[in-house]
Length: 213
Image 1 (tube, one colour):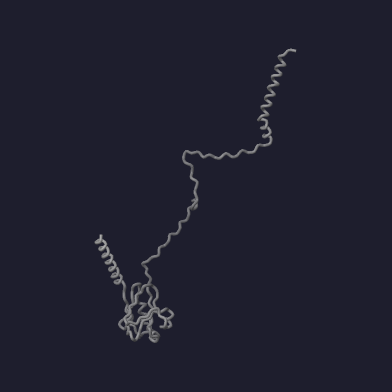
Image 2 (cartoon, rainbow, N blue to C red):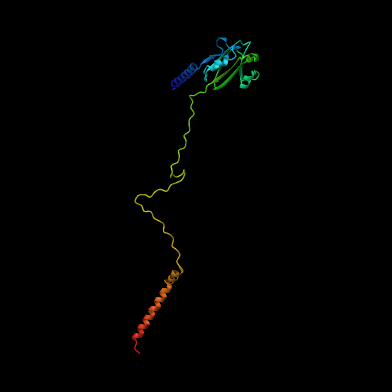
């Protein structure tokens, strides 16, 4: 078990080293000013023209070579770049052999630590391209609802199963008219009373017919 873990650790470390080597191999380092290095240019547009003719990507870096006792490199904002203001830099480098790596896309502004040198165009603007390999996922648009379909959450009545008969509810009885109500009132105990009287009258008539005078 310990050998397997040790083997996995060695493999993981090897892959990490390989990734770093590949990343460094793909990244490029640009020498600012070429053989002249970071100094006051003879041409006022030399640095920016050179930057415009190169394509900078995330992971690339700039190399500033200068005399550490006479010059420096300042990363500044756009306003300080235009005004050659060295008093509030984002970052300051004075080692004479400065390598600056680009970690994000967008504009980067650099000026000389000497305001006089900056006013003589010892400054450079570099635009780092965005990473086009990372595409933004597009959320799918909701599909239009089909006519006749029930809205979400509603329950449609299920059709009757084959062979079954639908039973229609019988409507409630309509109220009787006064005439029918009066006629039906004799159909109860009153009809029995009248029938009994009729029977007695019939017996009496028969008896009177049989008995002689």
